[in-house]
Image (tube, rainbow, N blue to C red):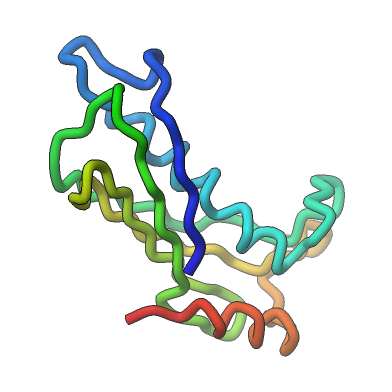
Length: 130
């Protein structure tokens, strides 16, 4: 599992003083960076090997500006050319959001999915969660 602690910015809040519902997907994307690095250590966008196929976010509790947020990221399932990423955001000892995304190992030249290489699969498997 990967962990990322974020300090919410004032601009992450909405008119009600909560962390905006548009902020969580951005934080979850940022917290997927270690997974991106497993596939593509340089993070060079001209040779990027991933595409996102699905993003879901469930908001579990209200969240606020003054308290840090920890995003926990793990792997749910690994398919032939895709993987499921499971993420949770925690604030003040409570889960505030849960997200699931599906990433596809992708060849932009052929516009088709490609199998996940064995070494990448092994590295991802070390972060499998239930």
